[in-house]
Length: 195
Ligand SMILES: Nc1ncnc2c1ncn2[C@@H]1O[C@H](COP(=O)(O)OP(=O)(O)O)[C@@H](O)[C@H]1O
Ligand SMILES: [Mg+2]
Image (tube, rainbow, N blue to C red; front, top):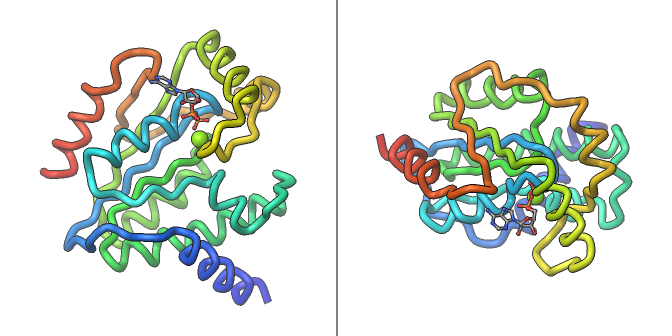
């Protein structure tokens, strides 16, 4: 049964996540959106250094459920079904969250908006971007290094394919260009979270 499988997946993901920050009465939910190599994971870890947030990195969670990922539509559907349940479970508990995933389509983001609305938590949206030339160099370097802590397989070809899927965020959001100083946006988000 699909829901039983999803419940099992959520348990697996929770087990893989390690420590959680202290629950809060009014946890915020930060969602980043951006193409591969734009610096989402980099930006999210810089944010989490300043704020006690748990990062849900879809690339890492995918590997927990699928050690050799295929990136098929079915795999992604199963993954995100589990991620949505996980988000809901953790926000209900009061865990402040950052969702680090490409989140390119508005229809997909609608699911996240509705979770935040239903649970009445503050939703902070961030579009992460970088000039294509910078992304090209980064993805080339990321592929060569295969450094630990990188869970993404996406390369320049994947970037170009996904570029066609980008949809504007139809709500208030922050924009950060990670080829420049990211501190001003981090500071703005910190103020928004504390408000
Ligand atoms: N602001 C930055 N300064 C320096 N290196 C960065 C910056 N943003 C990203 N990178 C590097 O570029 C590569 C791609 O960034 P990453 O955060 O993995 O992108 P994404 O998660 O969006 O696919 C990584 O090796 C990362 O360390
Ligand atoms: Mg990433």
